[in-house]
Length: 115
Image (cartoon, rainbow, N blue to C red; front, top):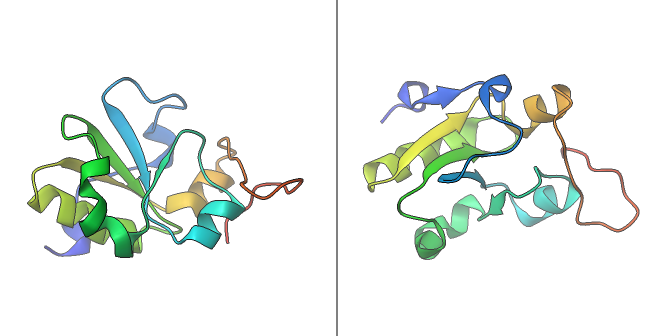
């Protein structure tokens, strides 16, 4: 599937608090996640996803996010091909931060940022 044809949603259309049955899946690397991520997101790096699919609730809609939207588009296509209802978050965490959405850092005494 061409990454441009995967279902996508704008950051502005993602609810601040996800309703029951929706998961925000962050597929960035560990250092990117630690620097700053959306609160309550599920972190599974793209390279580990195939081995960690059991961590994704099967009955949930999955919003997939990375830094800018490229990796998440590939993951969205993969998940949709494997039975999930996944949607790519356009612009990724870069747009998330630019929109002033809440972020948290895993690094003590550090303001969250997108790297």
